[in-house]
View 1: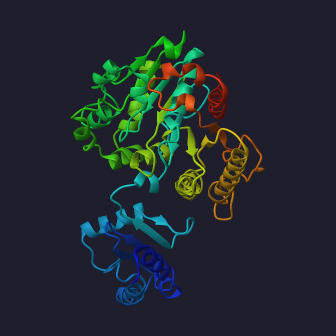
View 2: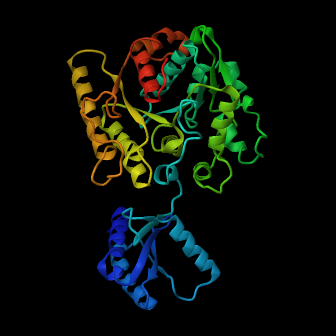
Length: 440
C-alpha cells in the first residue's frame, strides 16, 4: 500500500508530466489537513476543460491513491464568485515547486508547524550598531546545558556593566526565570504566557510591560554590575496550563508574517521590553525539539541562533533539520541563511575519548552544514560559501563545553557564578557576542 510521503511525491510528479503540461498553463497540488490531494488547474487557451479533467483523473488516481480526493478545480468553467475567490486564494498561497518557475505549485494545509514550514519571520528590528541584538538558544534534545549557557552569558554581561534582558520562551518546560529570580518573585510574576494570551485581546498600549518582567539584582549573581531583567514564562500554578492551552501559536506566526495583520504580539513583546528596559542584548531560551515555539524562535525572530548539540545520532537527526531550516530552507523560501553558531555540549572532561569525540563532532557538523546550509547546487543563491573545515569563525565550527560536576544540579546561579565567569563559559560568552558585533 502507498503511504503519504510516496503518494504526495507521485502526485506532484504526475502534475509535471508532459501530457499535463500540454493541457494546462499551470497546476497546483493541494494537500489538505488529512493528507488528501486535489488539484487546481488553469487550462491553456483553446483546451477543453473536460479533457483536462479526464487526463488528470487518470494520472492522479494512479499516482496518489489512496490519498487522491478525486476533486479537480478547473478554471474556465462557469464559476461562482466564491469559487473565483477560492481559486485566487490558492494561487496566492501556493509555492512553486521547484522555485523560480510558474507552472507547478503546491499548497500544503497544516494543523500546525507553519513556523517550521512557512515563510521566514523577521526580527522586530534590524541588527545595526544602535539596536540590541537578539540571541536565541536552541537544542533539539533537552538536558544539554542550554539554559545554563544562557544564564552564564547573562551573568557575564551583567558583571561587565551591560544591561541584558532574558526571555524564558520555553513555555512547556520553563526554567530560566526560576533560575534567575527568587521564589517570591516567581510566585507573583506575570510572564510570556500571560502577555501572548492577553495582547491579541486587548487594545495596543493597554498592557503595562513592567508587570511582565522582574530584575535579578542578587549581588551574588551580578556582582556590582547591572540587574538582569527577566521575563519568566509565568507563574507555574493551577492556572498555568489553562493559559498555555489557549495560546494559538499559528496566530503568533501568521501575525508576524502577514502584512495586513495587526502588530504581532511576539514582536510587540520585544519592542515594549526594549522601550522599557533599554537592554544592550536580548537572550531567548527557546523550546527544544520541533515544537512550534522552537520554530518561532528559529524562524527569524532572533539575529543569532546558538545551536546546542550532543555527539549522539539522535541529536544530529534533529540538528540536521534545524540547520536546513536556517540555511537551505530559508534560501528556497526567497530569503538568506540565518546567522548561527554551533555548540558541542556535554563533552567528556578528559582523555583520548574526548579528543576523538570533538573531532568526530566537528567533522559531522561540517558535513551537515555543507549539505544543508552552505552554497550547494540546489541553493545557488546562498550567500555563505563552503568554508575551510578548520575555519573557527564559521557557523559549523563547534564551541566546546565540557561536562563539569561543579554545575551539576545547581539550584541558583549564585552557587556557581564565579565558575560561569571563567574558562569555557567566559569564552562562549565572548564567542556569542562577537557573532553579533558586540563584546564584554
